[in-house]
Structure formats: structure tokens, C-alpha cells
Length: 513
Image (cartoon, rainbow, N blue to C red; front, side, top):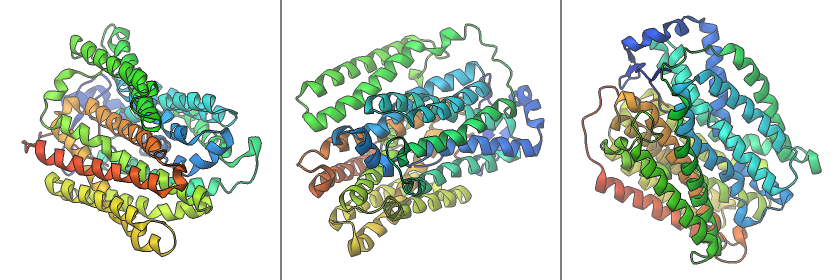
């Protein structure tokens, strides 16, 4: 689930440079515009990298999989809406990535990062005091908007302030912070849930307060620490933000996720599915039509991008990358804590092997990049392991006792390893498909696809968990949702083999984690 693809454009949109397969950057003349930024002290660079990595850590923190049950119980959130604890953040996060990437191009990455970080810390504090599910969903969605500022701004700032020989190390550290967040999030969540209390002192509220207390001082200091960038020379900046595209895509994606959730739980012939689904499709069609009418330099998602070989295929495959992990973490968290009445920390320890396996794979692929140069082999093995892991989950039945060690534990190891290899190949594939001048928008499209895939996947899963009475307590429901993942993963493999085409590599391919 973790990782990052390097962005290589300067603040004014010019090429920052190019990175070969080994991670070395070949600078271009455009770097002269920001040369003064790279004259800051090495200590300050390291401190800034730590600040950016904290932002990545908070964006990728997987703590909510272990907190859904206690939070839903406290706020009276029914089973069919519990996934909105996660998706209310993920949908707005995904929908706004392209917009904030455009803002960074036209205005200042510093201000996007600093204001986004401040907003994320502040909304977390507000959330910790909320008393009902609806205000919780609203503020979680707002926090997703602020969090989406951090990714595109951090990429551009790292490229701006680091010297040529420092980029490989910088993006390795930055990407691994995401890997640690995913692998350790459930453990830290389990520790927080040990805090005793009720009402406003409930443990999940302390999580939001702790996050806010950590973020706000760092966010305030970032206004001083992060160097200012020269303003873009583009005129009429506001008109180039493509606010129509942002609004139609945001509403369309939110309604699409809502419709799938309601359809799976109430039936795909119900008005609860048909109405939001129809409106979402109409809005997404309007978005595509609007983008086709705009000049390339003004469009949020220029149509010309889809003409690059394999790009559409990689974006389709990206839908599975986060969803595979999310649709595993959430049911296991609920089963262990709500059905089998294990403590949150015990549930987190049982989930830890998958995160560690993915993290070790991330580190290995970072330092041995040649392992990522055969996409057909990597994707085939990775997706096969993804299918095998879920089938073993189903065969395990009760995932406790010896069944955990015979079925679940090895599945966590194999699945985590295989699906991170898939995630890595998708990252590399997108960057291979695009020239360096389009790397920024490519990274934003990739993250949007991954985040939306996760939101849609767990929304469908929420509905499938209501097929039979009992929700999570009825393993039939859980297994139905897991068979859906088996089918999705297998379909991804078939589509990959049917549509992937070997193409010459762009000479400026980047793939950092």
C-alpha cells in the first residue's frame, strides 16, 4: 500500500531533471531557476525531509482499520455505514489530489503544504469532540481535503530543495515513511485503544487529539522552515485551476461511492442505488466532456494522457492496489475485536505480519531495483499470490487458534509480499508510460486511482457483509466479500495479460518508493 513516485517538475512547470533506473538524476537547464533553494544547509534539508515524511506518515496511517468498531459503537454508526469512517476521508483525499497538484504548479507548493498541514491538524482536534456520526463524516471529509495537499506539495518541494545526488535517498526515506505508517498503524491504534475512559475521554478521541497535538507545532514551524518558491509566470492563474472539473469530478466520485455502498446493502434495483449512481455517471460524463474542451495547459485531466501506451491499463490496475489490503484489514480487525472479543492490541499484532511483509518487500525493491524490470513476471506472481492469500483466508474459517498459524499467518506473508510487488510495478508502469514533463500529473492520477479503488472496494464489501443476517459475526458474509476480491484480483491478471504491451522505456523513467 505504501510508496511514492517521484515528481520531477519545478514550480513553474519546467522539467527539474531526469532519473535513470538506478535513481540518479540528470539535471537540466531548468534547475537554474531553483538553484538557490538547494543552497540551504544540509541540516535544514534533513529537517525538512523529516517534516515531509511526517505528512506522508499521517496520510498513510492505517490506524482506522482497528478503530472502526469502537468508534462506530460510540457514535451509533450501523454496519452498512461503518466503512464511511474510512471512505469519508479517502474519497475527498483522492478527488482533490489533481486539484492541489495544479495549485502547486500555478502558485506556491510551500503554502499548499503548510496550510494543508495546519488544516489537517486542526480538523483532527475538532473531530475528537464530535458527538454524532454525520458531523464526524463531514469533518473527516474536510480533513481528507487538507491531507490531499501534502502529497503533491511534498513531491515538488523535495525535488526543489535536494541536490542531484540526494534525490534517491530523499525519496527512499519519504516512501519508507509510508510503508512504516501502513505496517505500524494497527499496532499504534491498538496501543491508543488501551486508554481507559468514556464520553469525551473515549480512547478513539484521544487518537485524534494526539495526532492534532503532533501535527500543529510541526505545521506552524513549517511556515518558517520551508523555503519560499518563485511565483509561476503563468497569467490568469485562477481561470487555469479548472474549478468546474474539480467540482464535477469530486461530486461524481462521492456519489459513485455512495451508490455502490447503498446498492450492495439495499439492492441494485433500489432508489438508494439508482439515484446517486445515475447522477454520478452524468457528472463524470460532464467532467470528461468539459476536460476535452479545455486547452491542455488548463485541463485538470488532459485527455491526451490516455493516448500514452499502457497508461489506462495501469490506472485500471491501480484500483486494486490499496483495495486488496483494505478489504483484508477491515474484516480481520472487526472479526478479532467485535466477534472473537480479542483486545485491540492483540488484533493489531495478528495483522502485523502482512504490513511487515509489504514493508520488507518495499525496502528490498528500493535497494535492488532490477527486481522491478520484468513487469509480466512480477505482476503475474504478485497477483497469483494475492488470489492464493484470499482463498486461504476463506479456507481458514475461524481465523483463530491453529487456523491462524496454518492459514492466515502464511497468507499475510505471501499476500503482503505479492501485492506490494504489484503496487510497485504499477508505480513504475505509470512512470514508464509518461514522458518526464507529465510525471507530476501521472503521479496524481495514480494516487487518485488507488484511493478511489480502496473507497469503492470497502463500500462494496460493506454491502456484501449484509447479504446474510449477522454482519461480521456471520462468516458467510465475510467470505462472500473475500470471493469478490478473489474475482477482482483474477480479473486484473486477465486484463493485464490481455492488454499490456511492451514499449520502449522513456529515457527519463523514475520509480522511487
